[in-house]
Image (cartoon, rainbow, N blue to C red):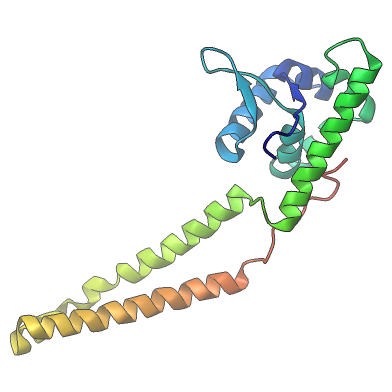
Length: 196
């Protein structure tokens, strides 16, 4: 999407459009910048001045509660009022068209698998981490076996026993990760009505 013209807006304009507080919009923008790389323009002090309206609406439709987003989903007339930076109707219509194109591109990229949902990726990584941690935490259960190998075979016996334990742990982790992968969806489900 590099070089693409984005329709930029402010928190105050979106708050007025959606009938919510400016603070609520600002809070959502901060979360989307942090978790979903929302395109923004910043002032000299690093504060967000304006942000991409299409990206904001697209991500908000997916990650905010469905009742709130349905209530806040703007009409075409409301979109024109937010994106219009001048009194020119032609300018407002042109920006509305850019907005629709940007949202359509975002949805298309998601359908192709070029975009991933950070929340689902984070959940998957955490599940994998828990399985690995669970397997490693069983290592102390082998202390008696290792001590016996050291007393019988010395360092060489310990090396062989550790190699065997490492192989068993690796196999257990691989099997558990394979189960997680089998139950994971091939693609993220698309949100109904995200292009409205």
